[in-house]
Amino acid sequence: MKKFLIVNGSPREDGVSAELIKQVKPYFIDCEIKEYSTYNLAPAPCTDCKYCEYHNGCSNRDMDIFFMDFEEADYIAFFTPVYNNFFPAPLKATIDRFQRYYSARFKRGANPPIAKHKRVGVVIAAGSNARTASDYMTNTLKQAFSVLNGEVTARYFIPNTDIGKYTFNNIELQKFIHQLRG
Image 1 (cartoon, rainbow, N blue to C red):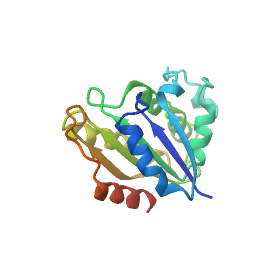
Image 2 (image 1 turned 120 degrees about the vertical axis):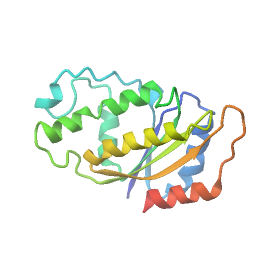
Image 3 (image 1 turned 90 degrees about the vertical axis):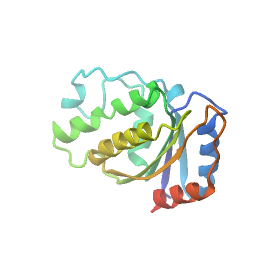
Image 4 (image 1 turned 90 degrees about the horizontal axis):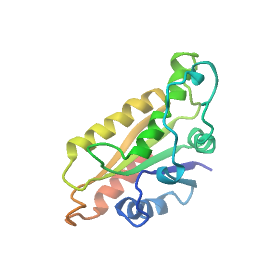
């Protein structure tokens, strides 16, 4: 059975990201689904302690279970609002903790640092029409996963959520699902 990892970067349990997660999950009922809220995960920031340059893993053990699920996933989808033109802090801290894999690759020679290839998608909800920020966020994930044996294959962008002038576009949702699943 394939595995689908959902990474929710929003603090709201009833916000746009939560609604989008509800819309996407039925398309993966054939998968084992694991879901993490980065706000509940509360990752410690990477301090560049150098532990991962010499050891597998991280000196902080707070995300061990998350990273086990991360490594085993076939599909990963990030659901996030835009905060100050980027990811909210707990999601950014999660991405920063990918350092363990960059060190594995570039310091310890593990190529790839994660055995299982991943298809990755990102769903971005913006209070305004922050398409440039959305592009930057997507490109950040593309760069990260180019090392992590993954490929960002899908993006779904929902602008103008702060003023309530947004819609959930079923055609864009279907396109996102199709691109993510491959």
